[in-house]
Length: 295
Image (cartoon, rainbow, N blue to C red; front, side, top):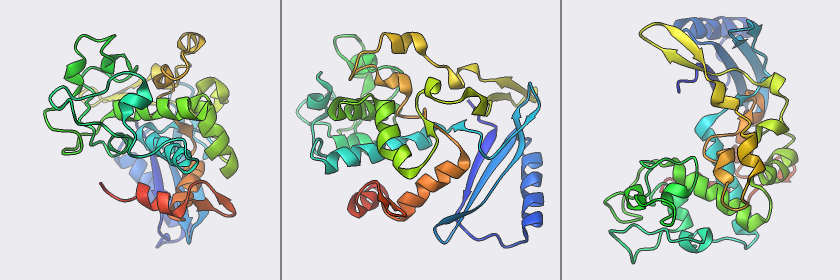
């Protein structure tokens, strides 16, 4: 899906007057034929400017507001990683943990059966797991539920290669749930969003649906937008049959956070300050730096 809303987080001081800046941003929207643009500017560690351009919804022709929230896709992984480090700091998890032990079923690359896959490998996309069998549930990886489970692994040994993998982070979200004792979406809300004073979340029904900025698929050949109706699907039926510690991917720890540009910028300020925002510490300086260190 191509998301025609752009979220820009500018961590530099504008070099032109505000009106000229806004003209430039409006030109950017026009140049890329974007539906809308939400902007947050951070200067000296503080949010100094927010503005929205374009439309929130093409069907209703409603203007986009800075307070409108977007499904932010893979930026969501940062919230999952932050949560994991909180649990590491509380002694409930370790980066060296064998994910087979954490999951409760065997997670081993069949070509390297004696090489454990660690939590750190999931977080760094070096697990050798891939998304070829899907990632919207944990079933593809579970040998008892998928006869083709071996196809979920690449040819290289865990820790010896890199492939971006959404299934890694749906596993991570499941571990957050299992080892915190709180449903994944509720954990993130309680331990990250509320302490920072942010509005957002992974559960659609916990949010005001009037704030959702519509997302669209774009047909480049026909220059046509199609509303992506599944972007904010509430998954009520699946949640009603929820299995704690296994159904977590329904909330998409890998991509399902809904939040506004200004509030996402405030969250990023916390990481710019290595785990602290004002007087609120979310994770330790050591672990925030570890999150920002390439593996």
